[in-house]
Image (cartoon, rainbow, N blue to C red):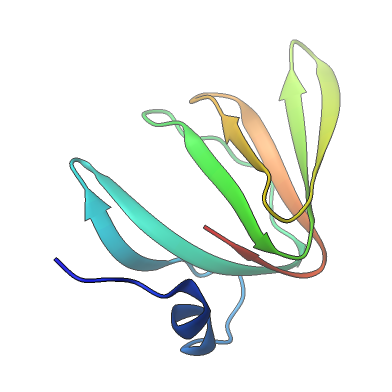
Length: 98
């Protein structure tokens, strides 16, 4: 067991869209990532994806039932993308995300 300081962990890397594992929670991994600009459209067949905005803001674009939706996330907000749903995160500047 150890305490994790998110600010310290984010200072340890500068690359974008490359999640870093900072802990394990049962069968799940806790990851930190820095986002900048947009990622690609993608989906996950076997797991949901959790986005908690630590710094900055992110827009999550979703494609469901041939419709596109957008969710604006600010610091302290989170969003869960269900498995199988096509999505594309877009950072408004640089964002730090758990």
